[in-house]
Length: 262
Ligand SMILES: C[S@@+](CC[C@H](N)C(=O)[O-])C[C@H]1O[C@@H](n2cnc3c(N)ncnc32)[C@H](O)[C@@H]1O
Image 1 (cartoon, rainbow, N blue to C red):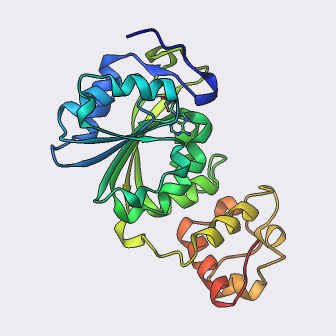
Image 2 (image 1 turned 90 degrees about the horizontal axis):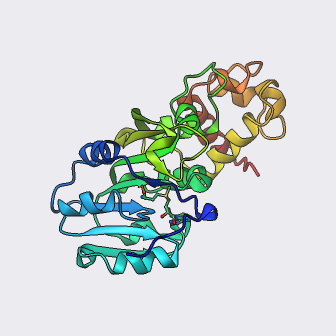
């Protein structure tokens, strides 16, 4: 097939290290009947070995030239191609419990991860290649600099484990930063526990807005000392000192009080 010139605006860094590709496919462990969705198949580095073990593989791709290439692959008959922006995809329109995988375009990884929380009840597991720095934020413990909105939300809903470090030279073109692969498994006991995910998300945005300020200061528009007391949070703490489950309790408590955070 003709050369494809990597497009920066679509975050195209193509995997070329067979060992890493095999490690990702081994981690996904595709069984023939699994419903697997690959985000951003690109030049099919992961797609091809994944499809080998599957009856069908869903792929989501935005780049029209790449979509045309995908349609010409020898195993194209196994692919269900969702053309367009993955941020617009309704994951629930694909029936079944899903395994989701992707070497993600780094510019959309954070909004995508937040969207995936909302379909966690239909997910078996997810494996993503991300910027290493993002993976470190996802798994960060409270009371560390990396702990923030992403860590709170994702740690609440998923068990997460970094399974692989990936250096820049594993890609073509090589990105400027290190990467890592993370495994995310929904924590079934917690799905749907936040009564309103958008409210939780906005609460966290404000709580972490000025990290050096206390929670009382950052949230004073919406949260009274009585509200903090009702869920056992000390209002003089900074956002990074509060555990994920306490934020969910606070968000639910505010909803019950009729407080909408904007
Ligand atoms: C980092 S490359 C990975 C390609 C391939 N999976 C690999 O590992 O070599 C990201 C892929 O996602 C696609 N992509 C970028 N933005 C996208 C979006 N918003 N929706 C769907 N696909 C997107 C790119 O065109 C590219 O194919």
